[in-house]
Amino acid sequence: MALNRLESTDSIYKVHQQNIRKSLERRLEVARSKGDENLVRQLEAEMRSCG
Figure 1: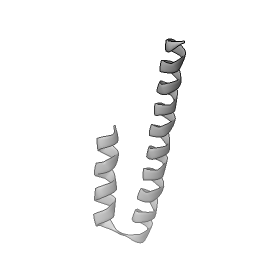
Figure 2: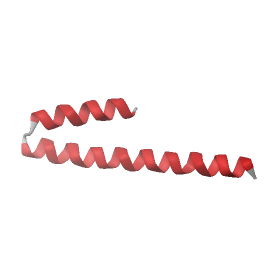
Figure 3: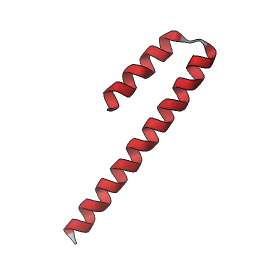
């Protein structure tokens, strides 16, 4: 039972991280298309900190 809970928590964490990464990638794409270099740098730094 505890193992299932740990596996479920791990799975939820991985999905959450994937969603954050996808969101950052979309935001980065928009920032680049608008030529907002300051935002691009900020989003790139955020991506590095997320791993």
